[in-house]
Length: 80
Image (cartoon, rainbow, N blue to C red; front, side, top):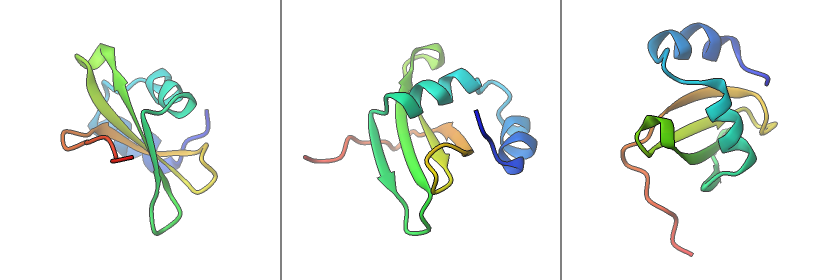
């Protein structure tokens, strides 16, 4: 899995409990996906290992390189 230097040096240091396999699972089968104005892509997924909490994974515009990941307390499924 590709990651940014920021993710490796800052995000994993602040949130050492985050597992790369969780990010991979969410990117493969997201609960929701949204493109930000800057081109980065947000993916959300439920992580059973986090007590069923929702994790937001942010990638660069390529949709593969993980830049950020964190539990998202405010996640709501988009209206369809």
